[in-house]
Length: 169
Image (tube, rainbow, N blue to C red; front, side):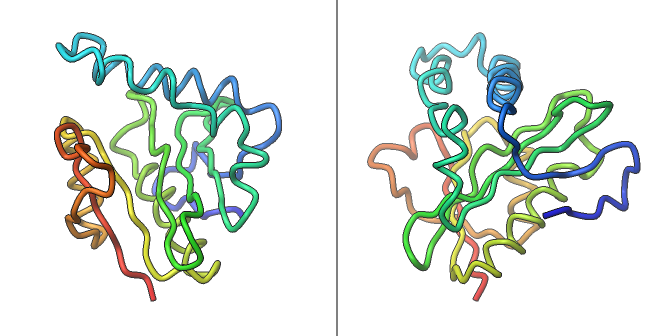
């Protein structure tokens, strides 16, 4: 699924391909380090490193009514985002990361728009997502897109994350 990129002609969005896993993992880890390398709580600081099995196994994890998108510039993966099936009516937007030098160009918005379009066409009624409390720019984007704050679905998760949901039916 190609998503048009009218705001910035030097990047494109494409689906995750076999072999993208190691590069995607490095991007996600790099963005996480940027934000949380010096975080006082080791749970937050180290959170992402043990939670990337979905990227390592993307061919199967994102096969059933799911989609993983990559933003590409100069033959490099510079952004990611995915829709993962939760149940028949609900999916989760995950893995929204953009390399720091590419932020502010509409890449995250374009990825999110493509994921919402996909989720709607896949028959989902609702998209949920969680985002670390510190990622306020991400929260502003989600809220501008119509996501509403939601109760935590991860017991105790509200200590570290904001939870959002978007009705798409």
